[in-house]
Image 1 (cartoon, rainbow, N blue to C red):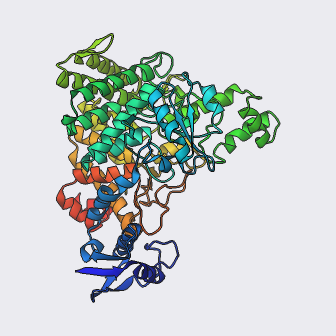
Image 2 (tube, rainbow, N blue to C red):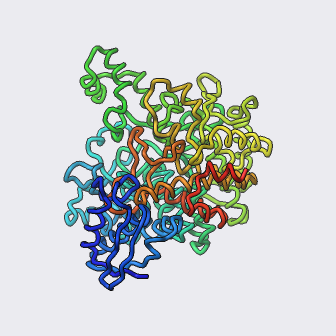
Image 3 (cartoon, one colour):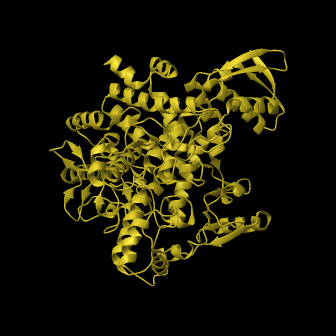
Length: 620
């Protein structure tokens, strides 16, 4: 059955009847009759019933309207499409393209004109070392109203602070005057982020978008070459910090999905990844610590400019009182460096390092991050070492030459084994049968229960015995209705009594943690547990999308299984009219990855929206 519809008229009638709260969506909170008689211009009359089907109709009308159409033919199969099929199809056919950016003449306006730039200012910063890019952007500056700023050869924290009042986008790779494409997370995040990009890449590869996944690897390598690191994101105020290292995994997965990229490409990106490992992560007394393990350590001076207003009020009030000044006066003097306070400077080193970890913010890392050898970072670097060994052995006849060194798989496996031993010495608790972050100052484990403690499963660090105990802990203390919670309830209650909620803590859950843990469970043969956790996560996403007009947001409260999360920055991906055309980057990827893991019978149950609490109680 196909309905031929006048878009504007049908849209107005549908919203007038069903959108009772006036938010241009049809959700379970609307109080309309949930029954709309569709009178098509081709003579067909049909009753569309229920929140989900009505919101699908609204979305199909919106898609056609966005194309500039006046009339559209919509098949009933689109309106009554199975939820998992619809969500997955929208991600594959609509969301990825909507999230794609390029920093070239075709895409420049979209990337520089957002609410993170000064009103009316379109500013782009270009590396000192990329002369051709300087010429390109200066050549199009007048046409697009660009302010092109060439960065100094040496980028210091002092320089970055000096341009915090003049924010702008950082240029990425250009080839033949075309920008290498990349995917942004969505919403206010209109730039290429570090670890988001890897997880987005997992979904892109599943959806056959090699072009975008490769483009992001190329952009990462450009950042290492010209900015000295993979950036937190390509904004001017992120120049002093990186993000969790996933480049080796990204390279390996892209190349093995499309080996026709060629050995020259692999050689170039592998060389750059090794450079990042050695110059960003393995520099003594910086991110490499005296015990041989690593930490997050971001540079920067003063208050991070990208934080929301009021975030640091409680901390700043203590220091303002110390100097007997109103908070506003103290902040002004501190930012101008008229007041230099070592304790507050140290606090902001920890805060920037916390943001470098990607977990901004969590009480696990607050005011301590730079003192910690974290489980997650060392697991990721172990993965670098084993990935380098694998790539060199399998694609370079076990001999990889650089300008001044020849690497073999044995070289990297030796480093990996050393790291594993150090992690088991410093980060493993035999008593608790778990890995924990290690505080280098107190020489103690933090004993803070975080989903990041399970990264060793993903990196294949654990012994069979360790994995068995960790999986028990995972299923007993982190499994909730909607998947895996970011931190245990116990740890948050112990450390954050009477404190504000942080978004990377209980009761919230995040896509990267789910995806890493699923893969970790697969690595050690725990398929039953993996299926259950995938089902829980996808059920929560599907249930919320069905009830809330296709909403695919940044994060969830996985305990209550709702996208209504208001801690800190709110929830990106929930503000739209009629239809979301982008979802949220790593949420999209987690959905595609999760569906690729589940057997067909469980996907069928997912389409029936069977609550996991009922489903797994029945199955147990």
